[in-house]
Length: 623
Image 1 (tube, rainbow, N blue to C red):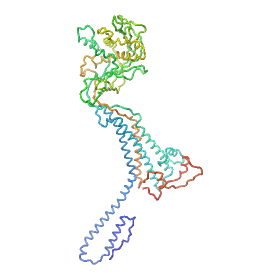
Image 2 (tube, helix red, strand yellow):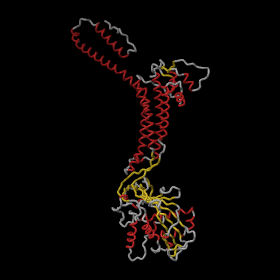
Image 3 (cartoon, rainbow, N blue to C red):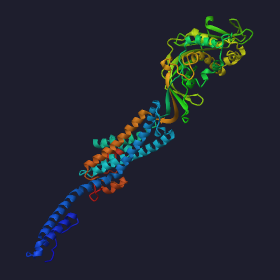
């Protein structure tokens, strides 16, 4: 008997299931049509046929199971395909945001490790130009991609709403459409014809655009250049300059006399005699500072830290690629000098230095300044006709220099050159503290007397310290040259503080290349062999605002994608041309009353289209 066709016709819409059912029906009819009387051979094949039937049934069930799961997987793949470009953009945004955060945090980490005297990794040594180039490029691309992601997100929301059964109202469309400008969004917000949801969408889209724009500007606001240090080694040391200690003066002078017991004159070593002339200008010892006690512009201020010269023990050898020494913290003295002060002194406040037979001489007067602890008022008067015993012979008015000296204790971080010991940088200054205990004026005058009394040291007056002032009366009286000699005068006044502090040779217990265990604790510090690197430092507040705003925009786009994935059975697609999509993939429903007067104003357009809804065209699935 001939094989019959299946009574169930195959169709395109049935797909695999219909073809399979057709084959099963045809096979079934063929089996029915077989003769009922079989040969023994045919009878012997009955069991295998049953087995084959069971296998066919199992295959049928398996195929059915596969067919059951296939539509869901295909559906998810279709949804993923429709948003894969947006996902890629979102991932790029996250990657660029991470790059920006890593480079900015690298600056903070470099500063932290520098403060902790720790070595810097290769990444933390990245220079300023590279950091700026990377961050400017990353931030620019990040801002552009974020704007694109936000725009695509609102487009996705727009088409999801259009695909709903009740469509999307036209004001909502205007609020979500990427073709609506900021001014149009503001018109929607203020229009009485707009419903609240449309106004909310307009506010959200305008706010998001502004957030993305501001985030692109904030990062480089209030940036500064800083220097960080890669540390090779750190060792314990003593360093710094402390307050004047009057008890050190006499033991020091006695130690000098002990070097030549029969010598009839005061011993004034050249080391100190040469150092006094420009002490406050010596870059190995002192650095210019901001005044504390006077702010009128007629004030000079110096920070005596001693630099590397007063560090013990000496710097270890090795690490030639590290050119600097960082000492942190360093006990220091800040000395403020006013340009002028009162020139009225009592005779008991003054000492005269000169020699009979020479016309070179000066008179130096010192008194406590009661207005501020740790302050002295000083005056230097030139004896133009020399000295006669205790008299200073002058013509009236005598050339003079006056100042008020105020002394403060501070601590600082000092960076010096390893090669020539010059002070390169002073930072991290602690607040100034006045010398509450004041200054031992008697011992202070004794120290200056040892320095300035050239007759006692058998130094000819033309070779004395006094000579530089005696030979420059005109400069002392001229404002344009006054500053040169005033620095010499200030150096003389600062000399006892430098020499007769406990961490200098004025202390007879000081030993070369050895720390003095008897020194006060504030002289104990750490010195590090370092190499400097310039970094750009970002303002923490601006950086936090940048991360917050950029994170807000990124979170919004991710939240919208997750919402779209969950609420939509199929995600709509759109082209890169919004106007084309709207013209050929959407239709309008509702009546529009068009007046003869042209509609140009935003509020008229919104009022005209407020009752119109937008729907998907049935001929286009936009999927």
